[in-house]
Length: 494
Image (cartoon, rainbow, N blue to C red; front, side, top):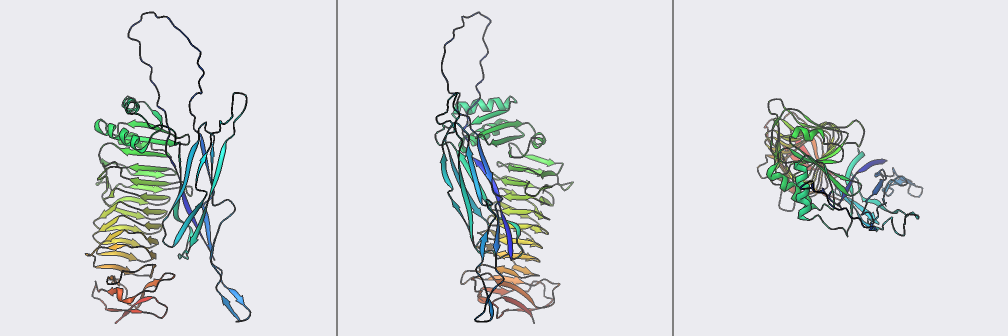
């Protein structure tokens, strides 16, 4: 049996940049003597770095069994991770006339699986080494290789996203922008100019945003390019910024948006929304949402983060509607439901608040590894595939309601005010369980009138029935929690 999974690819360029110089205008029309001198110049640093990705698709192969002619029985073979030739490779080529430092890192979302990077940190020398106007230089390159270990327990997995690979590139020798260069850039942006900078550190970027924050409305569009440069555009309105929010760009709010009257559609592009401590208000009267979709597999990824404090997306019913592609919440607050009809929703931080259900998954894959989900009714309503790992906090009358496939790992926290931590129509795979002395509660839906399996243990897990308790939320029937011979936990009607 083969179960195919994939890793999302991302490129982080830790930038090295130079600022455009603006010529001063003459004060009068007096004639002056023009003098010239010959000076040799190296033309400055030009960055050009290419990243070639393997498919990052891996197969988890589980042999059906090996025949033992001595015992006349099938014996389990060892499961293993495989991949096509080159699928696990990340090749970085430096054509710049400066050396760059490269780091390749991974972030695996699923507990029980570990990624290793062989040759993931290296320095690529300048392609201009020994080059002259008559002699060509030579590009330098190196390749990192990703391998996986551990157990994939989801037997339904098919090209399931389980993590990310990130390539970070920077010039260690380049100096950061000066305050004067930042001020010049900000003035040019306010004047309506597009500004391309080199050597923008995280602190420099924050300083540019802070300076614009004080005196500008609308939003800032920024793009990190393969030449280790960042291009900025200041737009006076949020609507104008949306029209420039193209593949590879970040839209940073500089002012609150009130009652935006249209859906915000993210299709076939990889973009970031930085709330920057502001509120993005979607129309409550016409039920508008951020809609994520794609027409080409792997072409869409929306990342939502808040570089400030208190950044929030508000909507009447649904703040984030995922029909295809991938959406990631890193930080910030979504003040209404996340709904997933297809694609993938990843939550590594931030908050989802809603007066009904926090997350509803009807046909996609949901990964929750951090953050806080708080709902009046159900924290996560799952009818497809949901993975809980890490240390998220989940609150609701029912924290997790499962109709489909659900895996729970890590150390999730269920709020004390929950009436039930689980409500099950289908079994949950538990790769973890409460600490000794603690209990997770489970209920049976009101429309179920027969015995039901609540939980099956993950590989290597022995479930302790004393760490779970049945609660009767609906009073139609009463159940007793028992442990079966196969180690699963069941609810038996009384």
